[in-house]
Amino acid sequence: MQKLLSSLGPVAAVIGAQWGDEGKGKVTDILAEHYDIIARACGGANAGHTIVINGTKHVFHLLPSGCLHEKKDIVLGAGMVLHLPTLLEEIETLKESGIDIVNRLYISPESHILFDFHKEIDGALEELRSREKGQGIGTTKRGIGPAYMDKAERVGIRMEMLGKNIEGELKERAKRVLQCYGVTIDTDKEMANMSAAHAVLKGRVIDTIEHMHSGLSNGKTILIEGAQATLLDIDHGTYPYVTSSSTTIAGALQGLGLPPNALTSCIGVAKAYCTRVGSGPFLTEMDEEHADRIRTKGGEFGATTGRPRRCGWLHIPDLKRTAQINGFTHWNITKLDVLDTESEVSVGIDSKSDAEAIYDAIPGWMEPTVGMTSFADLPENAQKYIYFLEQKTGVPAALIGTGQGREEMIIKS
Ligand code: IMP
Image (cartoon, rainbow, N blue to C red):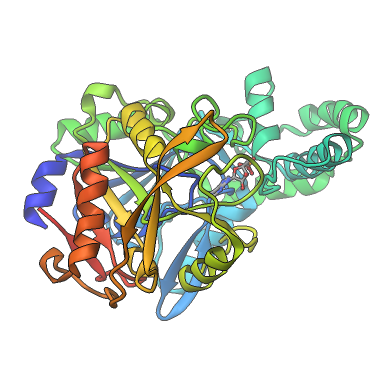
């Protein structure tokens, strides 16, 4: 671990290389112990990670996975869109488990408030797309797109307004929202949500840029927890089947107000196979027989929506591209054990006219790897699979996940 930490340096990021759900939470959780500030930069409650507290599973959407570690500062950056009742619920869940995070929570005044009406607009727009085009984007219906639409239109309401009277502004907005989307804003409810949030969060909306930069000057370290993933990025993803934020390392630095030269490492997280929820292209999607097996074995159901995830093989050109975009210094390959019972592991290595993948077949290992913590103990073919990924992408696989548990991880020097 010490070797890994010195190669990561004081400002490390964890960024998804596929379509989300790669298991970024686990590596963040492992590393969080060794960092002072855990920061989330972009997105909102579309993210979902399962956290087990005292044996009970909880799904968190806004707070980063690292929040369980006591004494760590938690930063929610300017690039985020915050649904306040969800945030309060997560804070309360932690409190009930004896973890009080309010006093170490730092929220950017520049982050945007995501109101209930944004969620309703999201639902209305999805319905419209399905009716008009036969299919929607398959959003999480958490209001993400509409909140970023307001931000881009420059009519968003930001966290700096917490505790201020925005009733008039909301009432004005209600007229237009009803006219454009047929959605009624319940201004009383939105105001009540604001007051409840103000009661808990007053004093926690501070200049997060100053907080992080003065921390860095005083020798503190920062772990950036990316949300969603590179192939869902608004610019570089499979547009229009993407989310509405910048999910790359560049987006994370922008969302936090950290300069590129502060970053010392960037871990790309990719499953040993690939999944996607929602609509959109998926060149290496598996046939149903394989997908069923992987879905069941890997528990591939959305943490936010419960939707079954589409399953596929790795696609090397995507991994190379995400490594280029993000400058990955390390891979964390997750869920290797899910492939334990595959007699052959396919890997997309190229494509024919962008429509059909060309595969290489790697012999499976057909032996359990669950819980392994040493690379040398892995079956030979599993090692070969990892070497193949390293060689094809030019990025070392520093961490390899072999199970759900925190300790089920190989740290490979
Ligand atoms: P939105 O972010 O809710 O607008 O959804 C846009 C697309 O991104 C949909 O295909 C979602 O399923 C996908 N998406 C958004 N957040 C996540 C995530 O955290 N994991 C996986 N897919 C996500």
